[in-house]
Image (cartoon, rainbow, N blue to C red; front, side, top):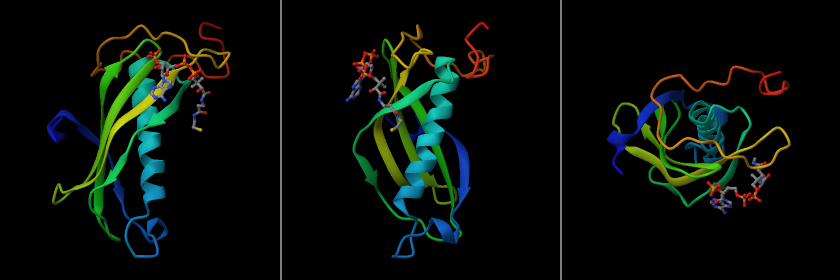
Length: 143
Ligand SMILES: CC(C)(COP(=O)(O)OP(=O)(O)OC[C@H]1O[C@@H](n2cnc3c(N)ncnc32)[C@H](O)[C@@H]1OP(=O)(O)O)[C@@H](O)C(=O)NCCC(=O)NCCS
């Protein structure tokens, strides 16, 4: 899959607290941002705020970023399962477009209020905001 299939949505400015001992972007910070980005993407695709990370495949830290770099991250759904959604992620330098990280598979599972996997019923990506959950997580879906 090419970068052109991914919509890069979230931008980050690499700050001192995000650096490792080598003075480059800390992988843990990057993974935290990606997991949150994936959670938001999954919620919007599955129409359910109760979607959780199940599996993250090999993470390829392709190149580094340094303090002051502007980076952008994006995801695209690659497979709608019965209860799961698989996504591909990429992070790149906003200016040079050089790839910083790729993850081929991030799997989120759609859960019901009891915390058990539940079929989500979707087969295709939505590019609209038509599946945004309309209830709060502390409420029952129609309560
Ligand atoms: C999410 C959770 C409820 C799923 O339970 P489970 O017993 O694995 O459920 P299932 O076996 O029914 O699998 C659910 C879906 O995940 C997929 N799945 C399970 N293990 C997988 C793996 N290792 N890799 C990829 N997909 C996987 C299954 O294929 C299934 O997808 P499908 O319905 O689209 O075919 C359970 O594993 C859990 O609570 N995990 C912790 C989640 C969490 O807290 N994440 C936050 C980070 S710690």
